[in-house]
Length: 262
Image 1 (cartoon, rainbow, N blue to C red):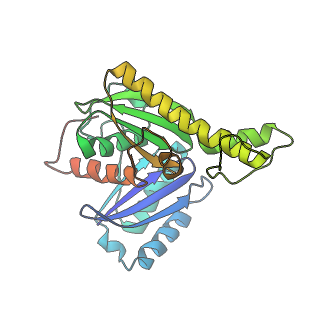
Image 2 (cartoon, one colour; image 1 turned 90 degrees about the vertical axis):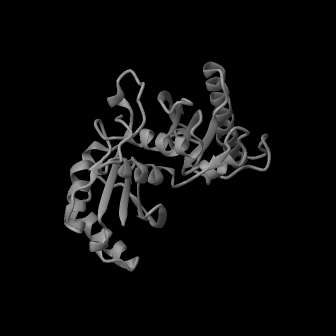
């Protein structure tokens, strides 16, 4: 089985694949203060809870956007499963040409998402990822990573709003009943929810205008399902898009599985 690990700024998502099938998945808090021993103990217990022997894991691939976590994650893999992981980064075979001015600046998770999304249609694609940041990644019809857009994430925007305003307090973000709120809670929900829906639709429209074609639009990340249900441009939501991209890149880095390099 393949263990895919996506280390994000807020959460770390792990998935166990048997062939192309995602059998189990877990979400942990990304904590730079935890040691590799602590993560290893957690991972060992999760594996056992899934009814698996650690020896059943015969491949590991990691996507990490938190550099201080890299040594911890690699040590965790060696301690728990006795093997070092493939780490997505410069030189990893992705099968997708990167046309960024400096390819090393592109977050590994963005490339992984782009690979998974392009595989769906083999057509022009935009990936919207509602993570700590909200990112848009653009892939050409030829499967080239063209670049993207980065904006503050939904959670960051809410935290900034509450931190900088004395009379506004944290609320649960859910779709409000109307655009025009009749109370403070609904007004905040409307501003954030409809504001991000409008941003997504507007940015994707501008991408289409600039590229001269409409793209397949897929969303992932924590708020993807909520916003995707109202956005007029998002066609599909997949919360495990990054894990699927890791699986594909793992296969492309096995002997004879190459499709070119990132």
